[in-house]
Amino acid sequence: MNRPPHVTAGRYAPPAAGRELVAVSADGSRLHVEVHGPDGAPAVVLSHGWTCSTAFWAAQIRELARDHRVIAYDQRGHGRSPAAASYSTTALADDLVAVLEATLAPGERALVAGHSMGGMTVMAAAGRPRFTEHAAAVLLCSTGSSRLVAEATVLPLRPGRARTRITRGLLGSPAPLGPVTPATRAVLKYATMGPGSAPERVEACARIVHACPAGVRRAWSQVLAGLDLDEGVAQLTVPTAVIVGRDDRLTPVVHARGLAAALPHCVGLTELTGMGHMTPIEAPEAVSSALRELTSRYLTTRAAATTGAATSTVTSTATSTATTAAATPVATAPTAPTEKEKTQ
Image 1: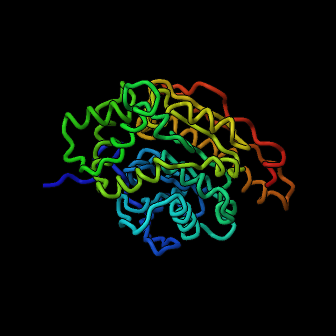
Image 2 (image 1 turned 90 degrees about the vertical axis):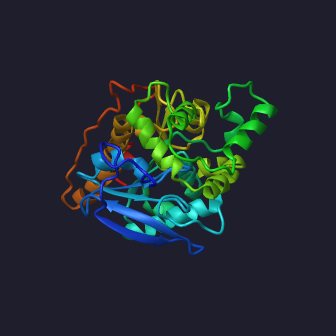
């Protein structure tokens, strides 16, 4: 009997959606979308990474859906979204735009967060008019814009052509991952997570990753191997925070630092000590706190400013920190919104 594609109990078990729908992308691809939380609440859109699914965001959905409208979707070929005829960065952007249009009212703003390939999705869509219409702010988790294979440190080899060639072959293997076993858990933990990751977090990641079809995993790996979204970074002009694990082997900290330097409006770089690539599961409190802080600063503040314009009422918002005992962010703290941002 096959195991379900995610854990079914505990913190990392996906909560039941309040509503499910299908978004149709530009090429006709159908995307599974879930909406959690109260209607009319500040909106947060979550885009997961390579080989994952909406289940990857379970901890953030549980935390935020109490007072946010949380929208999560399965990338094409992942989770409950069927495999597609084509895979590309254009498709990533098309799919995100389709989800925004299917779930947000015209002109409605949301915080958009992406992990790994989900962050690359945001970069790919950055120049799209529909994205700029809906994105109030962005959180990029454990991601990069280019040179993914060359910079990956999954293999303990010196940087160079040999490591790049072997890494490309390993990540692009067409072989099925097979069942989740102690051995495969150990491999996944080494490649994608920090050395201190708790067993339940490793199990949650393993169930999700192993559920991704081998053909889809390989097709997307080829897109990621040739990724170049540096231009998209330059077009991402909304307030954007970056978060990364210092022990990330798939998108090492060099990517996050490069993004923070290149983004037109970076509002914070957070490096999580002891964490690997799977930050939303490895450091759920830190990621949830970052999401909550960004909505407080750039989404609810703007909504309040719009509502209060008629009465000339000035509303201030409190901020929260992303520091937890298990994962301590170290680096620049998010900057306060400018006077211009408060009135937008």
